[in-house]
Image (cartoon, rainbow, N blue to C red; front, top):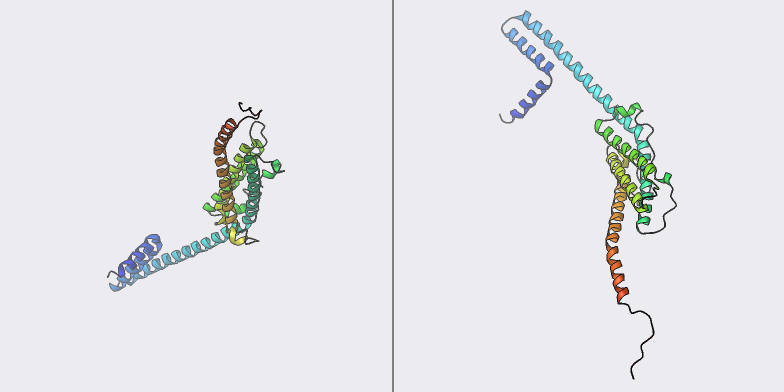
Length: 262
């Protein structure tokens, strides 16, 4: 008896989700009772109504399955259509990260800056979004991560155009702000890798480079290491200067050697 309980629950859930099927079964059952009590006219009417309801449920169920299959196909085609542009934008923001990291590290250590110009820090912008109709066929969650990544690109673009080469700011601060914005964009890009199957569609050309997800994670790790190194050096600098001042005080001044008394 206990073994039948799960089956009964499944049947009850099926009938609850499909009221047409439940009503059809009820009509067939009452029609059988009509035959048992020798009321063929009522039984025939009930069987006919039950068959009509059952046919309606089958038609609606088939239409629902067909719509679900068409929706899944539209979603897949939308991803195929939008993924090449997405990959192009991810490659560009990774390049922007390399340049921002190099300039930040050089400025933090007081070295000469690389020969980059402002346009080298400007990311590519999407062309297909949001006008392409395929975008509206994406699943809700996939559309959200795509929009968040594209919004982060606009944020980097605006920051570079308004913040780059400010005369009142130190270079290390400028490139630190740009690097932070690029890191946030890379985090948004990483959220797109799995839904759009980036690693499988665009495998690494060189095994040492790794797939796109690894490239993004490695870039974010490099940013963290560069900031930690700069903060550590900044905190150690006052102690080094104090030590140099102490040594300069203790060091004897150059002058004539005093004569020994006779």
